[in-house]
Length: 169
Image (tube, rainbow, N blue to C red; front, side, top):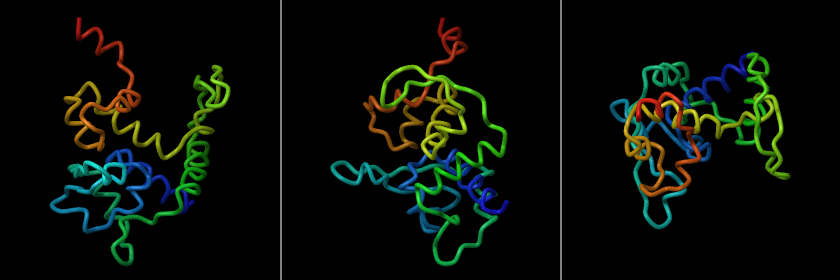
């Protein structure tokens, strides 16, 4: 399915750069110089703007090379809501249906849900941070994710693994 191939490529690209979906959809070819993506996240434009620079992973470059978009667009973007709907569909088609435990956002009660039913673009951002956490200094991750240096929000993006705890001891 070509539509889901596009969604897969956008999602994987987002996992490799860690941007918010609002920033992702505004990125253009001009944001990339010498295989480094550079942009100012929308959330930091007010007050203390920070330029984020992310060296592109070879897979990200490969994804970009699949598309020759008209104008300056990087990828065949769709609306944020439709993108999230298609991510759920993509996860289900790909067989990513395992059950996970989460707190229900309305009732704050624990519940079991299929991961494909809660998958979203924000999962790509969490994946970017989670894949780097424990392998590189947190300051490096923060510099690429656009979080403030003292960000309390940053800590919501990762879980400290048992291996990291054992290595610390």
